[in-house]
Image (cartoon, rainbow, N blue to C red; front, side, top):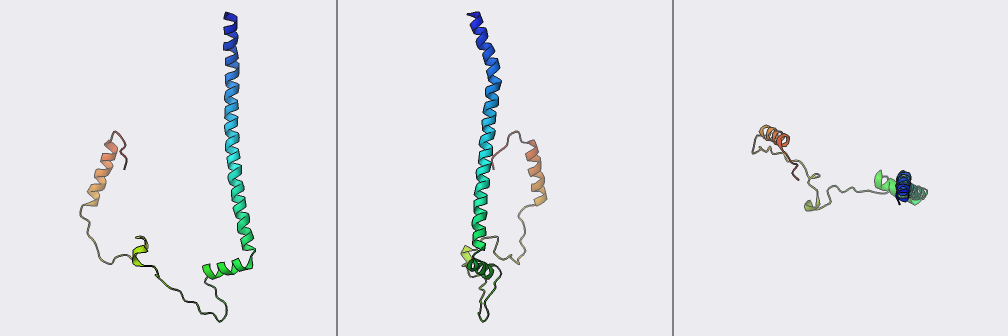
Length: 126
């Protein structure tokens, strides 16, 4: 019985590193297969884009849209700010010419924030 138990323990010591290596290699293979699939998808997208650029109608449409090219005799009108005011994002809105005063001293608040962050024992979500 003791000899069998010894053989089982010895087999475990021999097989555990081998199984660990096998699992690690399988994880590496899976990661590499994922990378290959991502690269293949990127190649497919670039191939599709290359085929689009071989089409003369697509090139003309892109030149008209991006570079504002026009055909001879054609009149082009550019409309600026054609969106309603409520659909414009705050970043795109014009900057106010009025000077606004802050309600508190920003330097004091900055100093308080830094000291409180340095003294905090736990991280609070926020």
